[in-house]
Structure formats: structure tokens, C-alpha cells
Amino acid sequence: KAGVTQTPRYLIKTRGQQVTLSCSPISGHRSVSWYQQTPGQGLQFLFEYFSETQRNKGNFPGRFSGRQFSNSRSEMNVSTLELGDSALYLCASSRGTGGAFFGQGTRLTVV
Amino acid sequence: GIQVEQSPPDLILQEGANSTLRCNFSDSVNNLQWFHQNPWGQLINLFYIPSGTKQNGRLSATTVATERYSLLYISSSQTTDSGVYFCAVGNAGGTSYGKLTFGQGTILTVHP
Image (cartoon, rainbow over all chains, first blue to last red; front, side, top):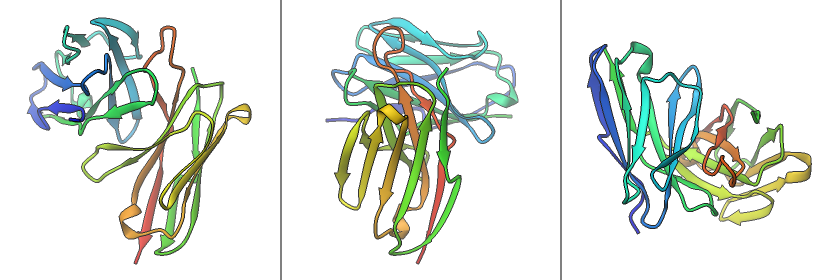
């Protein structure tokens, strides 16, 4: 069974640009969550989608948004990038019980 | 929201030693997981253990939900055990189905 797949693995963007990250969950998992990891703040919850609906959102500005498609694949978008958005972005999928499973992450660098 | 505290923040061991990592959380949860973050950043599932005790090889974990803590035991440590260990908790159901709150992690270094 394939695991959680995140693309791309690495990204370098310039301040002010926007970026879209993609996450394909484990087959059969309908919940997808996104997390940001930085050295200063640790791992922080961004948002969660289930059946194409955002069910929960963390404390991040509106520049961070996401969506989920009917096949459970999810994308997150960050607009007007700031230097502080440089981070490892992790996606997790879950079927409700048994816990969450994470992808390899996308490392975003904003210059 | 739920607060998660891990201890110790750093742990240095010689190969072959045993260790115990602790995770305290501030509210009742029905989801608790332990992860090992590999050098490339991926979070590797170690245990899904909202309560009780589980063992997997040299690793075992115990969660005492009523007292709001969990322990991760590593026996006969190896250099490949080095890395960051995270505890994450959540409440599946309602509106917080998949949200996990992470501790700050324990950085484990195992010397040969």
C-alpha cells in the first residue's frame, strides 16, 4: 500500500510569490491534515480536510489556504510569501482510527 | 488548547544503554502517537497508543490516560535510534478529527 505522497520535495521561492503544495493520502483515507515545522515554533497544525470540507483550522493568517478534491488529494497554497514562511510542510492522512500517517514533507525556502 | 510537554529535551547515550522518554498532556485525549523524525524530515510512526502498553522490538510504550502521560522506552539503543522523538495528541471525533498537537520533541543522540 502506497504511503502519503507529497510533491514537490523541495521548493525555492521569492518573497511575494505564491506556492502550491500537493498531498496524496493513503488509499482509503479521507482525512488530510497539514502541519508547518520550523526550528522556532516546532510542529504546528495548519488545517484539516475531510470529504472536501475544511473541518479545523490552526492559528495561521489567511495567506495560508487549502482544499481537498473528491479523490481525497489535497493542496495547500501560500500567497504573498514571507521569509518566515520558510519551513518544512508536512501532510498527514488518517482514516479516523489507528492514527495519522505522514508524508516526507515539502521543504520550502523563501528568499 | 491541549498542552504537550516532553522530557527530557535532550538525551545522550552510549550504544547499548536503555532510555525512557516522557510525554505529559494537559487534557483528556483519545489519540496519542509517538513518532521518530528521520534526518530527511519524515515523521515515522512508532506507536498509536491512546491507552495501554505496546511493544515493537526494542521499543515499547505505555500510556496512562487517566494520569495524562505516556512513556516511550528504548532498550539496547543503537546509533540508528538517534534523531528527534515526538509525542502528539488529539481528540478524534467532533470537529477535531485529525488535529494533532505536538510536543517540542526529545533529541536523542546515541554514540557508538
